Length: 406
Image 1: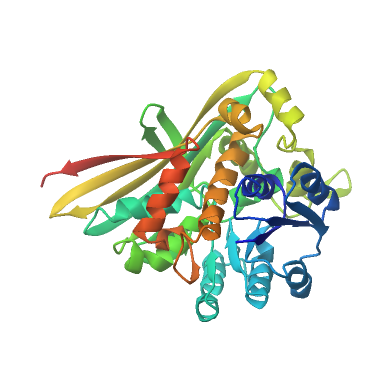
Image 2 (image 1 turned 90 degrees about the vertical axis):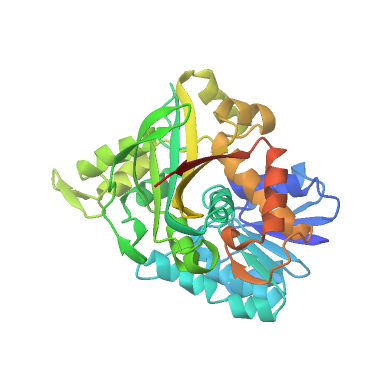
C-alpha cells in the first residue's frame, strides 16, 4: 500500500501517522486537517508525511486530497463520517474510522444503520470500510467476539470501562471535555430482551467487582458497542439478548454531580439578568486534556491522587447445557508507562495504538473481507493477528471462564 491519507491529525490521527512512518510498504502519508499547523507539524517530523489543509465539509475536497490513496483513515469527529466514506468510495480507497455517529434526529442506532447500509456499495467496489476501530469501540469488540465464540448461545454482554487516573493537577477528562460532558448526558442506548431502548443518563448504577481492583460504581453510558452489537447479535454474537455498555470513574462522578445540579443542561437560565447556557459554561471552564509532551509531563510531575483503570467484558450464556460466564480483561499501559513509551497520554496511547493496528491490518492485507463492518465481524484469523500485534504493544486480553452446574 504505497500511499495513505489520514483525515484529522489530532491525538489519534497523529499517533497513526507516526506508526505508519515505520511501515516499509507505506511510501507517502497525506496528513490532512483543517488546522494547517497540525498537519505541518507532522510533515516536519515525519519524512513520509505531507501536510495539507482540507475542508472536509465537502466530499469533493476530500476526494481531491485522496487522489492515489489506497486507504483513508478518518480521525475527524463522527459527524464527518458519511462524507469521508462517500469520498473513499469515489476515490477507490479503503476506509477506517474510530467512532460512529447519530443521525439528524439524534438516533444512535439509525446512524449505525446508515453506515452499514453502505456495505453493498463497498462490496461492489471491492473495498473494505472498517468502522469503530479504536479501544472502545475497537479492541472491546474484538474481545467480545472472541468470548462469544466460546458459547452455544449468549444471553448478556456487559462491557464495563472504568477510568480512575487522577493527578493533583485537575484534569476532568483525558480527551475533549466538550465531547465527554455531552456523552455523559446523552441518553444511553441499551439492547434489552432483543430490542433497543433509551434509558436516562447515569442509569442502573451498580457496584462491579473488578479482579485485582475491587468494587467500583458503574452506570449505563452512551456508546457505540450496544448499537453495532445489537444489530449484528444474531449473526455474529450467538444471539445475544442483552447488551450494555457501562462507564465509571472520577470523570463520571464529577459529571453526575454537575448533571444533578442542572449544570449540564443546554437550556438557558437567567443569572442576574443575563442568559447563560450551563453546558457551554462548564465546557468553557473545564481545563482541556493535556495534548503536548510538556503538558503531560507537568500533569505527571504534579503527583497522583490515584492511577488505576479497567476494561471488563462480561458475557453470560450457555455452553454444552451449562451456564457459563466469561470475563475478559483488556490490559493497557497507564499514564506513566504510556508517556515513557511514546510521550503521549494513556488515552492517546490506548486508542491510537489500537487504531494503528486496525490500520496496519488494512495496509498489510490482513483483512480480506469486503464491505462495511465493525471489528466484531472480523474473521478468526484477522482477530488473532490483531491480538498478537497488540500484545507487542503491551495491550493484552485475559479470559477467565466460570461454569455453573445446574
